[in-house]
Amino acid sequence: FVSKEELDIENAQLLAKFFKKNKFDYCINTAAYTNVENAESEPEKAFAINAEAVKNVAISCKENDVVLLHISTDYVFDGKKKTPYIETDTRSPINVYGASKLKGEKYIEEICTKYFIFRTSWLYSQHGHNFLKTILRYAEEGKPLTITTEQTGTPTNANDLAKALLQVIAQDSKDYGVYNYSNYGETTWFGFAEEILEQSEKLKDANLAKTNHYRTFAARPAYSVLDNTKTQNTLKVKYIDWRESLQSVLKNTVINL
Image 1: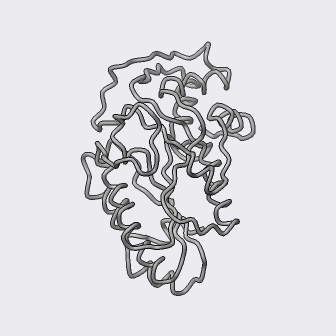
Image 2 (image 1 turned 90 degrees about the horizontal axis):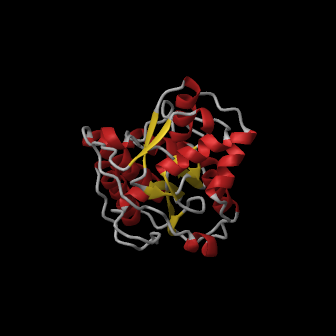
Image 3 (image 1 turned 180 degrees about the vertical axis):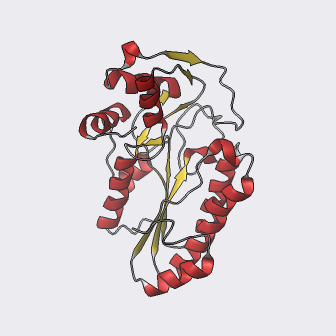
């Protein structure tokens, strides 16, 4: 594993040298600009990381015969469908973040022949900054929570995504292309928050309210559930219900707020 401090993928020359010096068969790119709100006011930064830097990675992978595994997003879709998105549905992002991730996807498709693009949704874990930890922290501090019911998607445990990527590598799959990966089922952000508080036994004490008029700077797809059928059938990756996966995070790990 290489940190951002050790390797800046925005630096094409540095990246090329790293690939020449270190021999490996697979590259998992988890680097991304993920602040959907801020991307609207700093699109250059979002595109630099989510598109141009991805282009650098794709070129180095191609030149060194390395298989690229890249993480993309449900936000490449506009959310106008009423049924889960399949991999070949039209990509039509409605915010800067989604547009920058789409451009990164296109660079990989144009440059690489050996690649897996995994679109995922509503990622969370016991680490870093994410919705799960925000809800738990607010509940712990007694702060009011007003959560939207306007968006429907699937919370996805980052640990499950990591296991899926490692499974693809372990089985040395040659079925390259674009795949969806999320946990199973669907909910709203309010439903996700409610389940977090219910499972952590904080619901009765939490100051939780729902709204269907939550205004944000960046537009979000109203419906972005992903259809995982192709991934399940082709790569033999198994799926876990999002509630069950959430339970494993809350019960089996220590979450530092």
